[in-house]
Length: 243
Image (cartoon, rainbow, N blue to C red; front, top):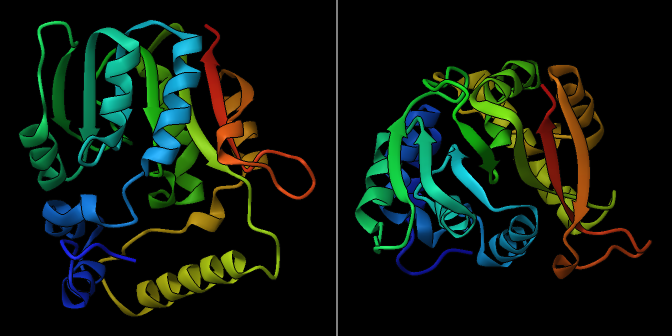
């Protein structure tokens, strides 16, 4: 599951018993060698979809980690890309690995809580990859309102979302076991470490985005395959600020 350069079991245990911010600070130097980093197999189809939707002038990678999504935004934004994350350690790794060229947009790395973004409406595109499990369902309306507030009218908020695993499948039981373990951990230990991926359901998310003022469309990512019923395994949610 992990590359040889990845974290040891002991390091993961220490991270899991920390807060989200402290845990990711500790994991940051080895994060890119774990399955938690969004894989290129997801980043590439999203890049292609955004190239069809763009180009954009300025983009924000929400909860950017070490910058996997920043690389996507650099391909579709002409002027500026900003990565924002609560973990100073993750931002430091992203900044250290940044490769600049004369034609690439400028990159800024900003430490901030996604629930209180320190920007005005200056972005044409906000993207996020795999971060929403760190927010409780009751926090999502406020999070989406923050994203809405930093987008210009007509700006897009995009993120990939996978279809839920079939009940009874190995993936279903794996996610259920993971969520259960996290809930037990948080019932017994403080500070909490929020990571509940089964709570991020497409129907709920679409309704919350619409209530926030977004017009929502779904784009299939066919490169990621189809389910037995013919539906896509992964879609790109494209939420447009309508006013």
